[in-house]
Every structure is written in C-alpha cells, then in structure tokens.
Length: 85
Image 1 (cartoon, rainbow, N blue to C red):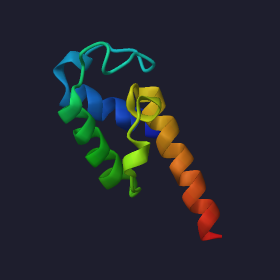
Image 2 (image 1 turned 90 degrees about the vertical axis):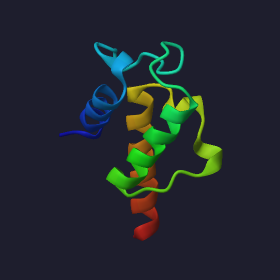
Image 3 (image 1 turned 180 degrees about the vertical axis):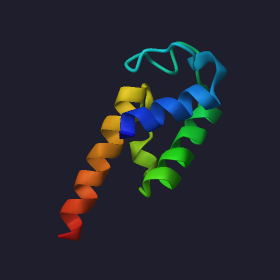
C-alpha cells in the first residue's frame, strides 16, 4: 500500500465526513476535520511513518488534503534519508 493509500484509509476510517472525499479536497474546508482532527492526523503520521512533525510544519500546505499529507510525508522521508547518508 502506498503512503497516499494508507493516509486515505486512515482518514476514511477515522472521520465520517470523509466518505467519498477526493484526495485533493480540503479536509478543513469540507468540514471533514477540525483542529482535533488535525492533531489525530499528526499523531497517525508520526506513529505510522516514524517521522517527527515540528510545530512550524503544522500548516494547511502540509495537512489540508490527503494528497498534501502524503507529499509532506514523502518529503520528510527524503530529507531524513538524505541526512542518514
């Protein structure tokens, strides 16, 4: 399963309003999640993918849609792999 698919499954199972939501749809603007939902997403991402989300990274650019979350996780993986070399 891809990162995007794992995030999609988590969102669909965790947030009732996510049923049928497009991957690029705003989770906030559609009312799918609220501030508590953002915290749930961050916790899931940190635990599932083993990355740390900094305070300055909690932005709509990173967490407002399934696609944006997946891109953020992939970017964090790339950065961390680059530092590990």
